[in-house]
Length: 178
Length: 279
Image (tube, rainbow over all chains, first blue to last red; front, top):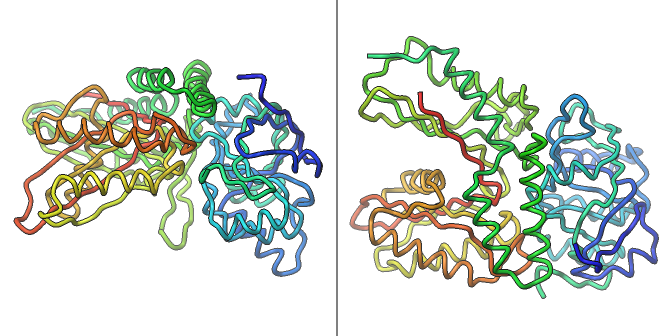
């Protein structure tokens, strides 16, 4: 990897987040929460019912992943990103409640992008199909909500040097349409 | 007549199911390395390096290459001199159950497309049976991920659309898929037959070795041209532009109705996992 890599920490500060630009290669260290289709549906239902979420969203990061089960002695199994566009219907409400970083793979809808800029959030793209490599960057994992969803449950991950590329920044730039 | 003991069949299938998840074929790795050498953009090189590093870690540390360990797809060739005193489909599903649980692979199958309750053991598998002459059982297995499968497409062209119509449809499918299909991809293209036959031809095309070429000269030329034009689309690794959009294109064809030109495009992501066993 080149020297052009930017190290960021999560939860992310406003200054750090707003300085990110499309095409930047970043290495994330800190806490990220996992969630994909089923967990997003439950989180949005909870917010709509005025219930509390399993974790505080403010300034946090969500990573779209459903890992393979950890083998005995492993922290986590293979844990690459899933396609982000399926979360587009749910993300705006989460951003309205403070979510600032979304991590997944591939392009997302125009409606999502507009909400992202409005909320000054960022979207990071992780290379798909590199779950073995990514599993080595996870130091700690615990299930914090919806355990019955198995792989799709919400996990709290502590990561170090977790690689991603800035895909949508706070200025409205889009890496997939340059 | 000979048979294959059920226990033997199940244990061999369990083995290839677990191996396929962690070991990428050398020929796929070679194609990835070749792509890496062609690239000049920073992001394309970065992504291909990640993919190549990942398969090495997966191989040496026995970790699945991708968390999407797929739906289990099998092509089963049954020699006419074989007999089974047990239910072959049930035995294959037992192997899937064992392999996905013992191998710590992700269970990605829901019982009904709308109730979406996970079956928790990755069954049922999708199995295609082909009767052949002989006394062997050849089973080819691929764990097929959802990301690239979701970007696959089928269309019924007219005979007038012809060869260019096929090329345009395949390229449009690749462009629409963009990064969602996890490029560099491998394309299985089925032309002819009818509606369902074209889809099966496309899937079967993905089971061919990367190094082989279609036997029919029309299909062979189409493979070469599609490979070239797809790599000129600049979709690139993970859709972030570059020269490596596809690693290979495989075209399988079949006779069809005078009024029809069915075309199916089945997309395989770069984690192109395959294993086979002959019993």
